[in-house]
Image 1 (cartoon, helix red, strand yellow):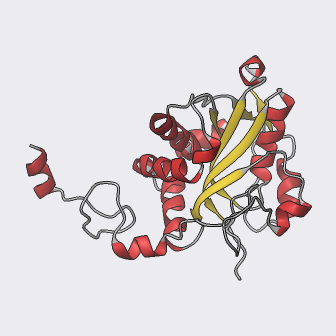
Image 2 (spheres, one colour):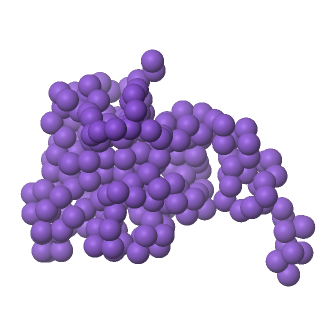
Length: 237
């Protein structure tokens, strides 16, 4: 039956109609456009840096911005194939992208995950979740839990207010809009206290959303907060 199904519905690339050898794969062209982050990276936000992978270093932004988390990783750059994947998962009802995204995240953030790390997704406000029907960050975190065996806490954080779109805002404006808008759910503080946490999100631009989440978790007594995102926006060089 599986052979018949493969003949009738051969596997296609995750981002285009090209045929591929196995499910949940990229064709050669899309793979070339998926700029996976390897080598030397900023230890705090995961952005790629020039040089050899020899020591822990910080990018220019992380040297001047006080990040309320410890370490960060990203699977690929937010460009070309990476951008298509993020937008399809976020706005295109492509929840089927969560499992491959989780595998890429597991590889990128392998040094940040243990079987005791709480995987907590960045939350959506309930109105946006109703409109979108799912939280893309939660879908990735759930799939990552299946890959790694780490515990998954989808409802640990909540957005108390609907914030305006962050598109086009400066870094400072993004932080101002999001400050204090995300909190740990009432009564769940005890589940966070003293625990290592890995925040999961689809894309990091300024880091304002992740900062709001990390501040809430720190306030609830988390022992350590790290972050992992599918894609990282980076300055063009």
